[in-house]
Image (cartoon, rainbow over all chains, first blue to last red; front, side):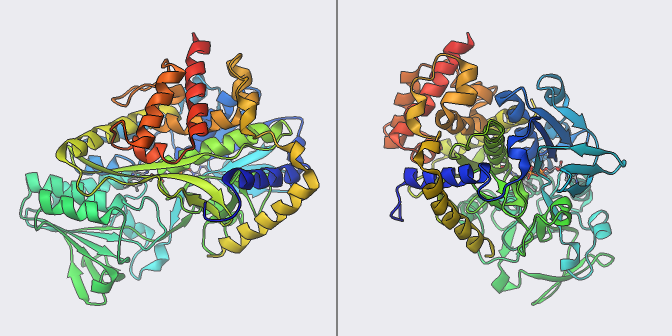
Length: 430
Length: 127
Ligand SMILES: Cc1cc2nc3c(=O)[nH]c(=O)nc-3n(C[C@H](O)[C@H](O)[C@H](O)COP(=O)(O)OP(=O)(O)OC[C@H]3O[C@@H](n4cnc5c(N)ncnc54)[C@H](O)[C@@H]3O)c2cc1C
């Protein structure tokens, strides 16, 4: 511990803080002692679906409604594997049948368009309202389509897919790759921090290169980056040299990596250093919390939602918990693993708050696997604790696959990446 | 970052709260967990919030309740001793691993014991 408080003492402080809140000392919502226990969850992705399932598992007396417009949720994790030809869209599709049947979560296939924090209701697109005693907001991300000149939602849906939410966007990018000529140039434009899945653009470059190496070996992948360094950089660069020599080029912000403007008709990108023409342009725009979080004023000036790290309750609106990519979770990355970990913490906290008790100190973890080729995997892990300025990584734990890992470890990590996916999918939707 | 003052503010409010509420209002204490093996449901929602909440993290790779459906090992059904020995071995480096050492180092020995107890007793009460 770097500060003078011991870890446990600090947890106690946080715990009693919530106790204070639950006792009304700090004016939390009346719902802390509600006689009904109704939770509405907005969004059935990694965060929301986990919270819905675990609320029901931890306390079957809680009535849980999950509002999610998609009948089929396609995961971003493994969507790069689809682009690389290692998986199909069916492999990354999940439904809410088990949550509904086995866990008796009330599934409402709708979009939430408003939150009434006085009446404790959410308004659905179909005009109906749902009452809640506690609300979980897990809408993931939205894109800042206006951040780049010439770019728009319709450009993303036609010429320049982001494929940063899986589904039709993934299919569009895949089709463009399949249609591209041998010798074509694929641009991946990566945003500045913070954004969803820090290693994602680089895993994508790797697996697109894997496909091109086999099918269109004269082609190139060029990453235009709005950053000067990136997640697992050493591991990726070493892997690229070994697996795809000369095929992947990374241009940092200092080397003209920042995209200033695009022209969808001409398929060009303008950077500080000039104009580039691409055969496939995968532009990943800057992001913010999902629209409903912005509309409900759950976001601060950063565009993300500040939360109390013990319970993931919004610091702006008591009674509403924000989890997943939309939240400002300190040192935790915006990953599906983190979102799910936060979903469990929020669920456990809500169970205790309904009992009139204070939440237990949270346990937050992350592991992000990235695949560079079918049998070449690397990972970054983190275990987190609460400190004076929020969620921080525990020093000495976590970290990266060693740079000198042998082929056996890399192969094992590729296997575990797939194993992780199977198990977390089942832990959430299965 | 705009969030930092926010959280600091919370933290100072919390220090006030500890004075106001006193330490009697603290159910999250680790000691509460040791007499918890009797009843799985009671343990899940009542007596060992710490052990349970630590163990929930494991499910993201090892499956719900530690039941894996992939190449990742199942923890469910293992004895408390087996799990504890393994976790402490990962932590010390005696037991080779890809990622487990990086995780195990994030927990105190006491926390590793709570996790082991949680999964070890979960499997017996499940039978
Ligand atoms: C290419 C790529 C690869 C990735 N790989 C990994 C990986 O290997 N490991 C990993 O851990 N993470 C990975 N991620 C990150 C991961 O996908 C996200 O961090 C995760 O999806 C965040 O979960 P969430 O619940 O916050 O949001 P989401 O999973 O996006 O879920 C949000 C849900 O809310 C719904 N919703 C939004 N607004 C409303 C509304 N108003 N009403 C009702 N429903 C609404 C949406 O339809 C959506 O289903 C990857 C991401 C990308 C892009």
